Amino acid sequence: MGKTYSYDGLDDDFTDSEFDELERNQHDKQKRKVKRKIDDYLEQKRLRKDAGDSDFDYLE
Image (tube, rainbow, N blue to C red; front, side):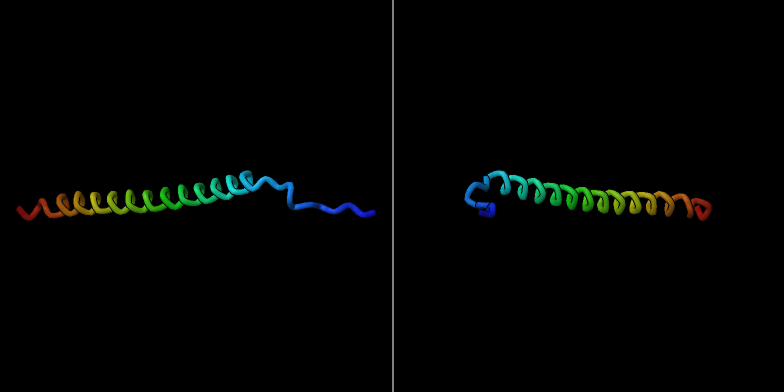
C-alpha cells in the first residue's frame, strides 16, 4: 500500500501564528518606510528653511 498524508494532523495554530508573524513583519516594514519618508521630508524642509535664511542675509 502507498503512504498517504493526512491533513487532519496539521496544527492550525502553528500556521496561523506564522501568517500573523509575516503580516506583522510586513506591517513593521511599511511603518519604517513611512517613518523614513516623513523624516526625510522634515529634514529637507528644515534644510530649505535654513538655506533660505542664510542665502538672503546680504540683502539687509
